[in-house]
Length: 122
Image 1 (cartoon, helix red, strand yellow):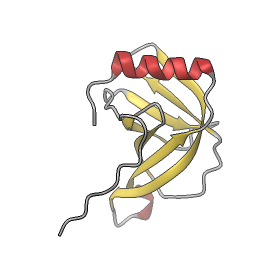
Image 2 (image 1 turned 120 degrees about the vertical axis):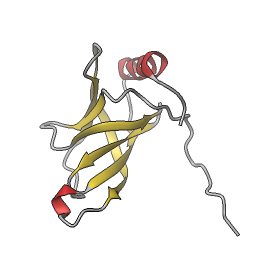
Image 3 (image 1 turned 60 degrees about the horizontal axis):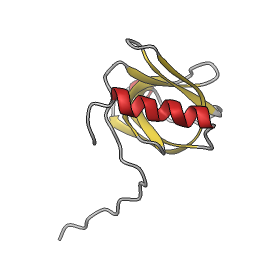
């Protein structure tokens, strides 16, 4: 018997173009392509190893559009391997984050991102 997983997300998730990235600040220690985004958080993939997160915020940007959302507070919810590799430092991983308290301008920018660049629901 298959159990259905309870959906805990409060916001719909959307796919973005492959030109959308998230980077953990302040020095972009981890940067990767955004897998999905919602008004409550996002998931992105990166190459590396799971390690403690010293970053307090992340930046979201689209390299082929004039969009840059800066200094978004977040909490890491998950960080799991997508494709394990024998070399631990080269593992493709998926990190899911929940946004912290956003400013009104950040909320507006995030809504603009979803309304204008989303390419479908997940």
